[in-house]
Length: 257
Ligand SMILES: Nc1ncnc2c1ncn2[C@@H]1O[C@H](COP(=O)(O)OP(=O)(O)OP(=O)(O)O)[C@@H](O)[C@H]1O
Image 1: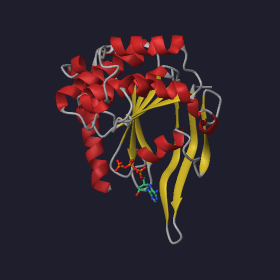
Image 2 (image 1 turned 135 degrees about the vertical axis):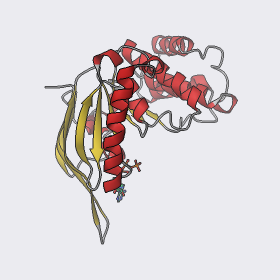
Image 3 (image 1 turned 120 degrees about the vertical axis):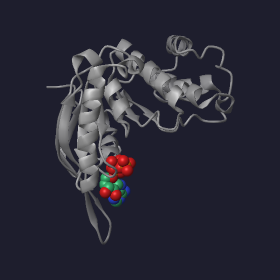
Image 4 (image 1 turned 60 degrees about the horizontal axis):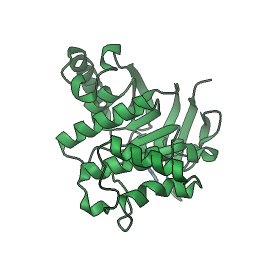
């Protein structure tokens, strides 16, 4: 059995007068340590899929197992990075980073020391006592990464975490997240609209089509692109080839949408 298994998932949203089929017949699996991206036209169900994986609600039908458990009972093993950093403005960076550990009842001298060490490793030494408003957007997202990593999650769900950043900061942060998750052998699922980001960070890319959201195709990112940083990967010929292929397929799916 794989680390994460999604089997024949379908999901409907119901209102008193309508029903929307958001997902249909979704099956895929992820091995421990793999990085997967979900890509597709607007409305193809990426957010719905991520919410189900996060255990926010169960799918209408089908099953999901994460490390042999269902997401609803496994939620403290899941970490998040979202488009907004959701740092509490009235708490210092250090207090924000310790918060998840505190809520999990795991805040102690050792976990604090590790969290502060990680903060140092990602270039945020010296900001521990500052408040989020005193940091740039990129620094805040790095702090959000530190908060996520502090609880040592088994699975990371990344919902467009770089989309609000300027281009240069985005590439630097992609590099940092990529290196961090690889070093700590974390399993991750990234939802993105950015083909380049998906190629440069992932082992595989799941391309969805819309109405209802289905898996259109799963791309293996070529081996030669997997062991270089997201910044370096953009200079490779194989990057351009797979970018063009996915671009064309996504364009045709958007036309159908
Ligand atoms: N709470 C809801 N109630 C009713 N329909 C919903 C709800 N949430 C999403 N949908 C519908 O389900 C489908 C999938 O939506 P979802 O937000 O998961 O797609 P997405 O791929 O994340 O979209 P985007 O890329 O635009 O953020 C869409 O048709 C959407 O309108």
